[in-house]
Image 1 (cartoon, each protein chain N blue to C red):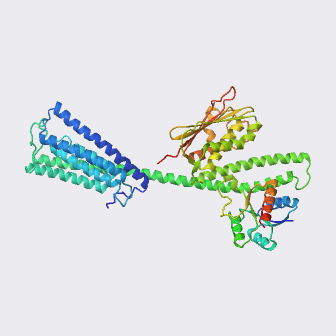
Image 2 (image 1 turned 180 degrees about the vertical axis):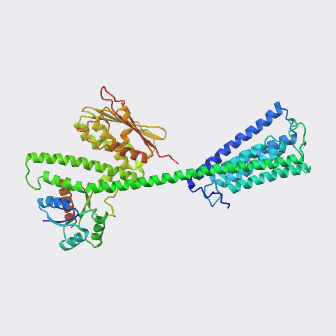
Image 3 (image 1 turned 180 degrees about the horizontal axis):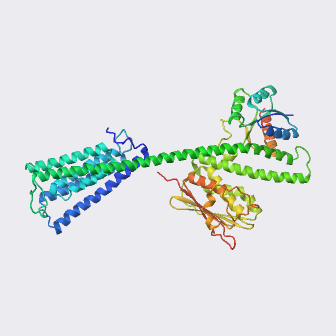
Length: 127
Length: 461
């Protein structure tokens, strides 16, 4: 079963997301801060990374995503945001942000599962 | 190049605009002045028996002609030069205008009798005008030069080096002034000039300074408004984080990810879910509006308005169908005028208007969207036959959090932010928005509402 890493500083969001994904049969590992997040990704090599855009610092999520790409980790990244769609102007799926898709917080379980499945399928095709 | 900008004119844009306006104003005034001068001479000759000599008439006509010529030249130069303080600019034009005017006036005064000339008091005008535009030291220097040249004319005339030119018909005894009188006159004249420059210069300086203070205050006000918006975004965002978590947890519980729940518990949880949705909508609206207020730059692109509307109507079609609402779209635009603006923002604004209409229109209601245009504006009119807005509240509905008193708050959800956002967007696009109620679709008990948005077309340059 695919392994998914969730990195978010909000334990409730971590809990809710892992619950949903585990119930769909995915294996889930979690981290509460960017440093631990980087570590688990390097060690466990998940098939998908879910990343919160804001952790301790407003742009932590972006920096971590960029760090992954710099280290040649090409794992698809799904980003949790709480501002993107609301404002509709902050960022897009541009090169600046090496992210494959966004999920707006609060997270709807169905949407989350949908996006995860789609991204995993795409990654599979690329191989 | 002589730098003419006074040190207190810090807000250059406004300063230059004022100078340009005044230059144009003086140029127009000058044509009028020539007309009045010629009229004065004509009436004087015809009805008051001025008995001007041939030399006088010729001189006055030449001077008038010269004024017209330099006025035309000034006008064409005025249009070409910029306002770079270090180069030849419109302030230099002002100075040149003043010097030319003073020379013309000096000659006119000389040819109409010098001390006895009825035109000599016109110097006062020039001093006032100069004080309004030019730096003090320059106007004082000009006043000096005027007084000295004036005295010189007296001197040369009294020594009979240059001839007298009085208006023979209205001065009975030419050359009857004693030297003492002439000296007193020149001293008095000089005194008047200087006092006027002092007063006018002081007043205009004060005015400029006050304007500058106002501008600074306005700037500070804008800055504090921005700080406020940033603060709002920060706070609201902090509130959104736990609320998002609550909502996410409720969602997974209701979706039975955690296990089975009894029906009464589920019903209560669904209620809680609805209430948290409400709060989140409000938070998103506040964030959106604050962000809009902070947003300086928009990405202008060509907007195909018909296409935009079709898309928005399409999005809301489902909702309209469920209430059996008929949406009628009439496009009366014909010209090739181009509407430019930020498409995402405009979509957001128009979509908000349609959502509003859909919310407040009853079953089997009507919504009509009409696009019309004037020479330079597009007029978007979105009318409905819904509950309408009471007359007294029509201004207030653009305020944040305001909801009209006739809205049934339980059945129609809303945050009261919608129109505030629409207004913010339309104003950012230099447009205007008005509300009319009753609308043209008004029915009995359903006055309806019209939202009228006017957006300027791109002006071709």
